[in-house]
Image 1 (cartoon, rainbow, N blue to C red):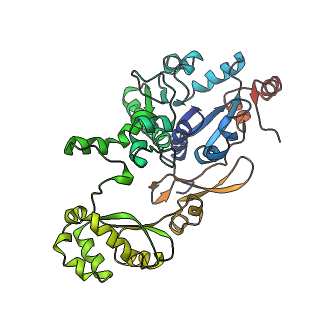
Image 2: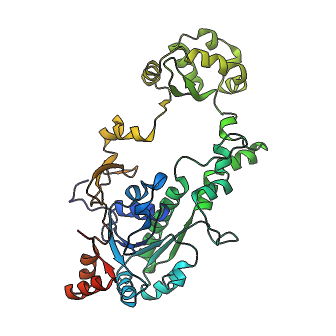
Image 3: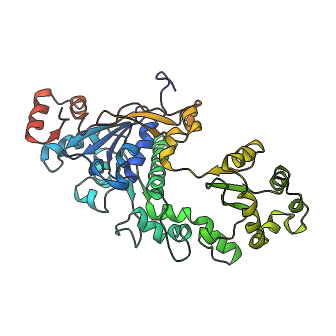
Length: 398
């Protein structure tokens, strides 16, 4: 996508109050689509910038294509600046505890009186109901929403290996914003949109809920599930690696038997159809594992690739930087971080006009855009300098 081709949300201004993953993901998606996203940070910066361990990548992963305005909202001047900014905005987003924005006078009802066209998106743990005041985390809703039960082995509920509800919750929040902006074209008014972790997780469990509704049998955790396909598993290979292999149709089964010379199975009436193979898994899978264990992983990959059979190597996240497809297709974008380093990050998994949506600006330093935003709002340089000196707003320290 060239610079001359306007992005879909060009001209939309979003003011973001967010931290961690869910709120920043919503803003990142809209920013990638071309919105001007202004991230409101305290003078010390979003605490997500300083996380260690599993959270060390949060800020880099979900805060690209944003500006940073560092401001002390407890001071009257800081609040006056913020309200002037929100009067110019199309969207406000927040993902703080229930009641916090209302306590600060920054809830939708208050801000809509200032800006009736405002679309306000709240990203919460729960949508309105008996649970809405609970504190939620991705782990909390994975346990409550059936996902942890389905992911772990029997008796050992296990959270998924990524922040799936936070990321998808941010995505659904962005989807709600897009719908509200579209409706605003006709009504002329904004509205409040809500997205929540728990309901998002329940949607992820919908297939298992309906499995019970259809069969009357509760879904078993994934490690002990009864698969819908005869071959659909991880196998050990001769060179001590693992590979996922799948044969999900009768046509694929005939191809598989032909490629590996398994004529005895191709002619076995006990394995004639996929459902037959599912019923035969108790004796069939151990025998299949012995066959697969006689081949190296590279040979299996080449054979499955050549004949259009589903397969996958077992990949660790850090190796994705070198993935041939991601690099050739432009799915990884180069991002200059807030400390000046260069890294590559996954872009949105969509293309428009045949190209991925670009990274348009470096990851912002704390308050990097404070001065420019205030000048655009009509404040003079000497006034801004006084506010910096008084700790009302912040700009980067060189």
